[in-house]
Length: 273
Image (spheres, rainbow, N blue to C red):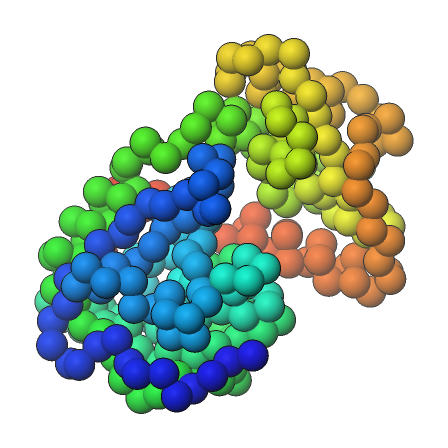
């Protein structure tokens, strides 16, 4: 539930942005980005319970880079369950001359799954008519620094990233079978295992993989072969959620739209460029 009587974190002056990487409940495979405004995590306390997004989701996506036209970005998610669909803080990011402005802070439920969504969301619950202003050069330098720093990437996260790269290259093969890949991550429940999310003809399924190698590159190749070299009916599916046909179609449309969207390279972008 969104509460709107919180005090705003900005007073109209030029603020300093710092992006800090923290561990989600002390789990090194799940780093989150805490957004510090003048050295304080003020957005996370709007309701006393928001947390940052996964480092890969918000930094590698280029979500914080200003675009023209401006777009709405979710920057914090529910601190209770960790799901942005439950609650999130979303704002409009805009370049204005030598300033970057965050404005129109709103809470949304059931809209965001990640920092960016395919269509511009409407509605939401306003947190008040205030804004936060940053110097564009300082903002850009901080985005570059945080995006190029991979110290948060544990061996397990690197393995997951390399596995995702293998599956990206075989995307046409998978979609030709009717399976649209989503997230790839170290398993939350089984040490040393990895989970791959798909939407298939009957709904969502999660495939769990157990590599024999501890080397990230070798493990990624091994797991990719376990998926690409087998029929979907032989995959090690550990979660299966049957969806109505219309929900399957909608999910596939969303995943197809994300594939059509040009990939961002935050390391090469500058604020407002």
